[in-house]
Length: 194
Image 1 (cartoon, rainbow, N blue to C red):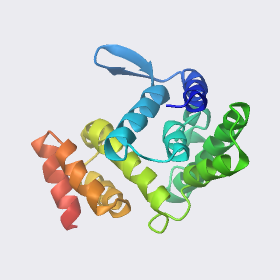
Image 2 (cartoon, helix red, strand yellow):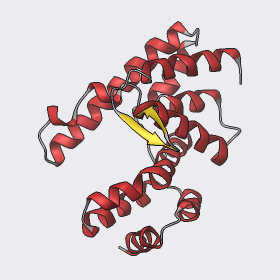
Image 3 (tube, rainbow, N blue to C red):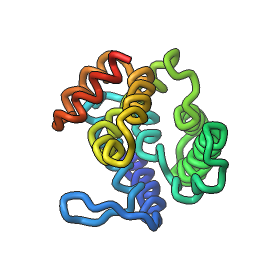
């Protein structure tokens, strides 16, 4: 890892350490978005270790400052959800741009990171697809079980169906290997058949 990349990661992590929401993992408490960022980096290293530096940067800051824009600030319907998600993407990109500027990155790298954070050209841009694969794999490995416990089966299958549609064939295959629970394997199978 280059010094510049390490410094950017450190700055991203320092920002995410401010997250007031916490998550317990292996008996330790973490700021939620810091833990998510670490998981994104780890998953990218497993799935595509030779990724370009700008992809590594985008993975590490994909949810940076997420807690600063609450879902409750938008209508609790599909339109409100999409408005919230779009506002979050812009928020992540703006924070990342500032940190990357301060870390000495050139304009081209910064624009590539912002492009990925804004999820542009999913399915047609290989870099955007790779980042989306990592997002989905992290969701399946660390967050799906809890999500499934909180929602009815029909909703979980619908969300999984939409998730699978966003993933590459390789990522779908790897996602199946990440699942331990028979219940979640069953839900994934139903979503794939939907």
